[in-house]
Length: 274
Ligand code: SAM
Image 1 (tube, rainbow, N blue to C red):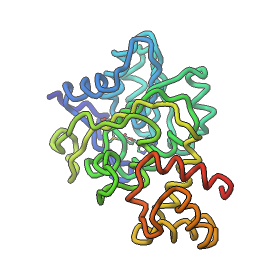
Image 2: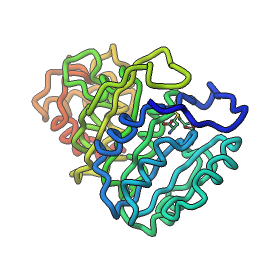
Image 3: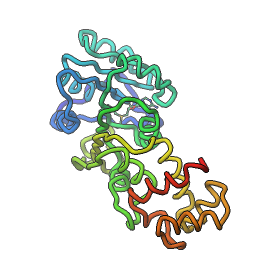
Image 4: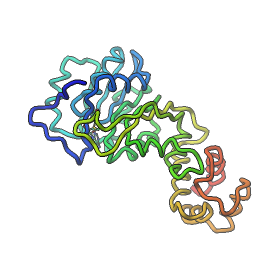
């Protein structure tokens, strides 16, 4: 355990989801889980006091690290701490407001890995921002709230299985690499965490299209899939039921009963309504 090094008089901001890591072994393990290579490009979201940033930089001395941080009060501290770190560039701003073209430019169009201890309040929007961006991402390795890791890795017919499980499962090979107890953060959050890793694989269809269909199918979880199709894609009941019939699906089936392959087929069928 290391003493957490933060700027003098620093006040942790709940609104930015600031729970910093203080365990060096865990920080190294996250970078190892991400399989960062010497010449890799890495995007970190949320530098905090730079504890994870430091380990990422050590892992890819011949590559490039870009770390985005929203909290400007960390700027002087981070710039001073890393003034001799040639392979690192900070961007101060909200990751969700940075145009993807700018991120592409920062890495000269090269593929990159995402490694981050994500702020919990916007973990899902950040994940969707990344996967729907069309950016050339090789892998995503992120610390998330344990419940979100469970939802993402859930299988069909399970209460945790939802749009995010289907979409990420189609985006790549999804795996929980480790559990992380709350005691390893400062300040200690009131939830446990886990590390999720996604090795991105080529998809048969653009992920933005799959995402639109899957989100529409899960829009009203308690309703049947047919009802969701009608409301989300503005089609008639006859059309919705015939789509299900063409896919050999029962007309009373629910979104949580379909597996990933069935969502690919459904996306192809619904193509004309998108
Ligand atoms: N990486 C550090 C660590 O592991 O100790 C900090 C992780 S902390 C859970 C999340 C960090 O993300 C905070 O430093 C917070 O200020 C930053 N953050 C929150 N919202 C952000 C956003 N929209 N864009 C960029 N950074 C953000």
